[in-house]
Image (cartoon, rainbow over all chains, first blue to last red):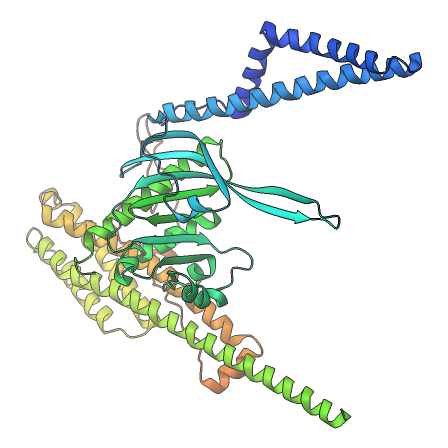
Length: 291
Length: 212
């Protein structure tokens, strides 16, 4: 039974308390608003005394607020990092990149720019070493208004990801994603024609309704069906919307949406990755060589 | 354009849409029916695997408990009936009876520690437990497909097309297990477990009792 961990909010409270005990924090908290107030007074010194007073007070309060918000954000960031380190250590995992491979699977190549952080690595149950991290891909949206001004915004798609090596015999690439709104099965055949992957229909209509399973055109049907034996199909269904995994070039990536800082959720993700890796390895061991 | 032509175009468009809908609905029903058949063949494979394991299991037990003739014969008879059963309803009933007979056989085996210790018996038990898991999963998949297919052919206007195309509702695969229907008996007179004893809930899975 892993040791219980302090939640991010508890750690944040600790961090805030620690920050408030530092001299530089108090210097910033007292001096910066005074400096801002004085500067504002100088800038509006030609106005009436009432206006000068109001502007000075606003400058003092605004600077103090900005300082407090900055403090909160710093404490939050430190608390999240501390939580992940504590979670990793309590599970026998190490802090560090481990065997992380950038762009290993389609999810890790999505978007116009991408980054990963908070890497921790360790063993999966009944499988090999894995790396867990917070991964984000961003999609660029460019809009131009009637005056010709161009504005670029970045839409973030955060995930918590586990990456591990897996011996996937006969399956060079496989992706399993929950079907989203608009991802209708009517378009599966067109998708299969237009890409180097094909959509596979398994024997469960419930599974085909919930998930889109795509494999490389060169993948062996037998190998795919050996992985997706009835018990594994039912297990995937029981995971619900949280089920998302990909295999490419002997790398398995299992992901959940959002950057998770919840111990139960992270443990669940590790458990899922272990189950999938073991299933793929078991199926690979039973497949005949020619498949 | 004259009103007659407009009416004709509208009627043709409606007819074309109806035909298109009919084709899509018909193809959908064919697909759903094929999914049911595919799922049933999946169950069939697992049931055959289970039937193939039983003679070896019976032989293993016979080597240590040959005098438990009634139990061994019951398993053999139940296996023959299960193999002869055709269709989900008949198979469900026969497999339920086989599951109960197997349960009794494994209960008998519990009384023979030497038998339980043999590698062959342990392997057979593990294989049987795996097969039971796969049967349970295949059953869920099959019943899900049947529900989807039956709904598809029973809703209007699909029911009209289903009637013309000869699509009949399919049966669910329910395994009859008399133990499931027995009322749970609670004995309040039994002594309170002493500290350190681990109470075992009634019908707790033991890992070696068929749980289909």
